Length: 189
Image (cartoon, rainbow, N blue to C red; front, side, top):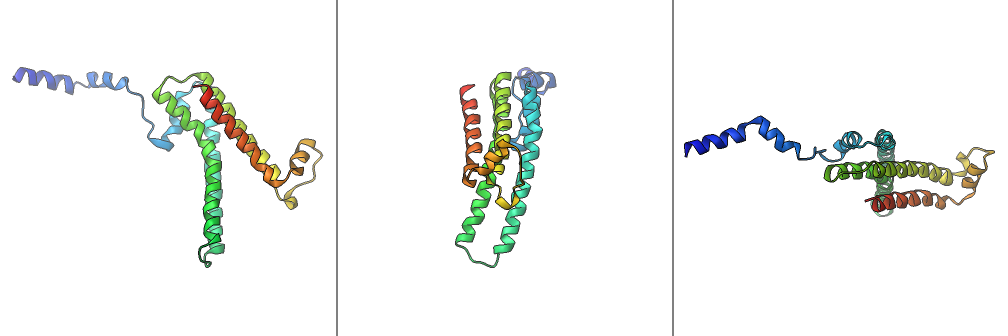
């Protein structure tokens, strides 16, 4: 009985044997902060690798803008009790989430896919391209929804076209780009 116990302790205490068992398991990325470096290392698509730092920068920048905007809004409406002001604060945070979530989704999707299954370069590339299109759609949304007093005169027919649209139409480009990103993810499974 002591020989069996000694044999078990040798097999469980052997670091080489334990290392072989760990090589079969995928590397963990521990949530959102770890997903960025993990997706960057795991992907073989240069287009997606270019998107990862852009997504990190834009997500952090948009989050900071919305946090400072919320602080400003709280300071301006701090003495007023509930009702409409409470709703506007919540809606403000909801809009920030709607902007940041599509920026983070491709990184999280690629990280998850590489961790669970063998992802393809085509999937990573297509998701990176659709994510860059989402960033472009945010620019078009800003052009469309810019207040008239902030618009500069332009000779460009494209910019003039987006200026001529009603401000509410600014929601259309990001919605279409998000839909394209979702369809890309679903069709290239």
